[in-house]
Length: 481
Ligand code: GLN
Image (tube, rainbow, N blue to C red; front, side, top):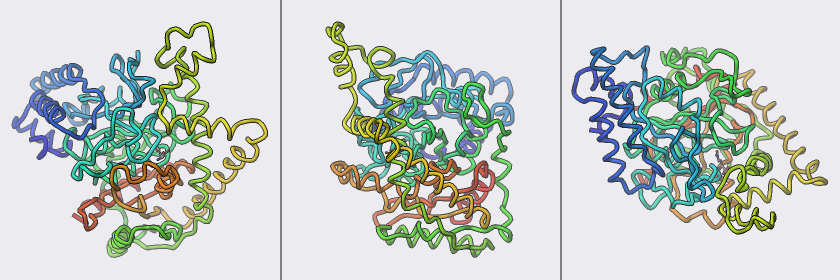
């Protein structure tokens, strides 16, 4: 049953028609998670899930049918990336250093989903502190791709992508600092949306790079992603960077876009050497589909985009080195015993809990921010970041959306890039620009390669252009099916 009910609409129809109850559905998902070999979940919160399902069941019995306006997620089982905190549920960030951390509060985005009736099944795996693109950097073992167990699901929100793709939840939350929602969504054949910076509260998201991090939905349909976004988005007084502008009711946007007026920018910088021929073919075919519908394809230039990876890996590591200073065994992190008299030894022992990639980034970031080098590296990176954003501003004077690939290739083999961090970093080349510029962007399934591995199409919009973004993706999803 969980394999056949893929979307919120299908779940709610089943509830309305009394084919299935919220308790039965939740139990089925818990069973499926228990039987799965994907290693997608780090913590299953059975008690919380069954408690929420029970409440949903009682409400449904009283109302007769799902009150879709008031409780749009009633009884819908979700999975949450394990860098979002939930009161009394272990949050590890897939790190040994937080192996036993139980937070005393709940992230705003999760609280809003639960208030809309959602059932929280558990916490999904990720690359440690969201640093990575394959989910192989988890301290608790890699996550397997939903259909190809010798492949990675992508990262860092790989657990959430696999959970959605393998039918272990209806939808999930991920976080995207440089592509961590869109990349795994494209590898696993699901929809993933990175909202405008400030669109969703970061309160309760364990910070990686605060000027880039955004929480977003991963789902089996654009409609579901839009609904999740609508429920959790909007200003939160607890996050001063969350936007005050009223959130666009995202679902309203899902009608047909006005194709005749729609201009889609095609940056030549997104069709570079190294792009797998099958991904290029699929992307061009998608562009032709939009054109056939009546949209106009417009070549645009993003001349500074080629610096994105370098800029990102300076800014992200710099912010990370500062954010992760709190994991010192005193404020957060496992407290080492027997080192109370020697502070340096205490820190050394406490911070030995970080994995290799996290250590690499803390060291790089500390270097990039150190006196004498900050001007040459960090400051310079911030300046180029601005140029990258200006390129987008200029492009969006001429076009409504920008389209391109999500990743140069499809899901790669486990271990294939693990020993070469630079190759792994280059894999983020098409996703990073949206984070640097604070733009909303998404990945929507766009066919498969010869191995049957999903390919994603990336669409980007101007800030707070989620309505247009989701509307076009929804039409594409329906039209191409
Ligand atoms: N792969 C990128 C990195 O390793 C992006 C991670 C993310 O978006 N959280 O930093």
